Amino acid sequence: MGWLALAAIGAVVFGLLWLLGLPRSLWSFAGAALMLGAAGYALQARPDLPGAPVEAARKVQADEPMLRDLRSAMFGRFTYIDGYFFAADALMRGGDPGKAAKLMLGGVRASPQDAALWTWLGVTLAEADGRTVSPAAGIAFRRAVALAPQHPGPRFFYGLAHVRAGEFAAARGYWAAALELAPERASYRRDIALRLALLDRFLALQAQEPAQPAPAN
Image (cartoon, rainbow, N blue to C red; front, side, top):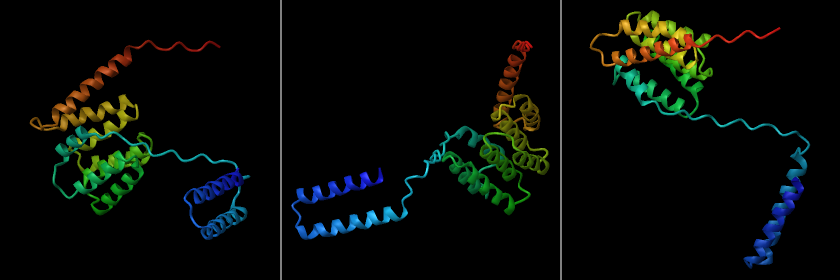
């Protein structure tokens, strides 16, 4: 097929030269270029090799402005960590959570006592690991909780990672703790309460589903 394609290209090139009325002196240059290409193909081509699947394009993620607003409300705006957050957001929207996690890892190395950076490292690691609460993500979230035990943010996003992983029962304890820690007048308290109520409703409906019968032997 490679040789047939090369012959077809040659026919098209010489046909264009003829149609454009270019002088015959230029035809030799075209012929030389084609011969050079044929020689390179003969030396380096491997048409006998089996085809290899092409890596799928990165899956672009939907923008989540409400989640960003909630993060800003919890951890504050216009601080030095915004640069890490915004860059990580852009990488995740572009479908590259692995690079976002590496970026946040650089952030926690620069500021190892910042619970917000550890929290978002956990979020990006969970995304990079296929929306699972992987051991690495769990370590990051637990470090954030240890650094800010009275802050609702680490627990809320830890719970969110469990929700995205489909581990709804595991998420409830984190969201309940986040609601308890949220100040009464905090703008985000209602958001946490609403999500916890919806989660409780879902868990109640899930509990009402009839158990699947055991398969017969």
